Length: 95
Image (tube, rainbow, N blue to C red):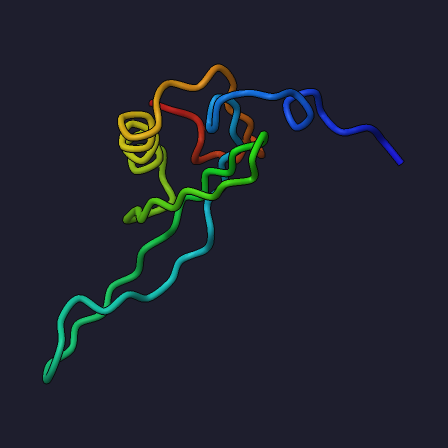
């Protein structure tokens, strides 16, 4: 079995090093009562590699614009990270 990455073993402040991934599209309800409206959205998952804490951001689509805005919201709340790991999907490539 391979060893754990150094980021998972070292003691560090939460969300200094994290991994991010997008989920597939989900349907969310916009209104209550009669005439309910639904729309599709995606969730951006940010996982801290040191503490395994999960941060969720709701995004409108799977493109780089929405991802960059989700990262901006995340860093404004949790602080600037030293490293970000991803699966190198095409939506992580900025404009």
